[in-house]
Image (tube, rainbow, N blue to C red):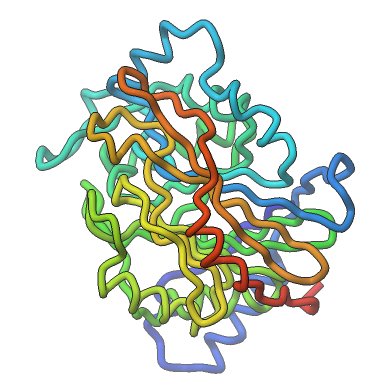
Length: 333
């Protein structure tokens, strides 16, 4: 089930704590509900998958038009085994003529991309990054509408946290970007607003997931800023952090007992640098009251943007092996 909690942003600027608590609790209690079927999954195991950056414009768009096989055919069995499959969508649905700004590439994406992602098995995409604003606010709204039309949930900062019910487990998903978009939108950490979002999420969810666009492009290790931001998010209550933007892998770590994927790298992208051809999927299981994560590497060959599964990264999985936080069992009903 997916619940969308959206509040008046001016609330976070007020100093009246009692008013803030009242509004937040009302928002949580009035949340709407849509159920996600779970009968095909083992009752004692909820599997969550999340990919890195997904581009479906530019050379990727051109390649997909000529392919005979679906682009995610190699992932069909893997995606079907999961209760929830997400990824970070780079770009906005619309025409190149609607691009705003000129300092970076504009990822105008055709409407057909939404249906392709839905058929591939994705259940949700985060749309908070430095390219979602490439077509301005109209592009953001059009993207939400198109994804909604095909039955694919989207999460951005404005509609965070979203609540997803998977059997008896409830997730709260928050999407952030610390990298400014073409239309100027960006978030900051530390932030009273983000802190309040996480607090609201913890009120009713068993697990709080933060998808975050951050770091430096092509940097293979997390920056000091990323480490400080991760520690702050965990301290505030994030249980799982899914990072993207560097376009290369940054190995996951256990931060204060919580799994942090600093950068999942590219999942489907048209960059030529060999390092951008390697990606990973965060593979997390909620089992026996604990969250257990590992990574599933992917590889994209030269001359294509379509990834395939690759050999496991032993070092990454060793770092996460002892990072098994307890999943909260009590929340508001």
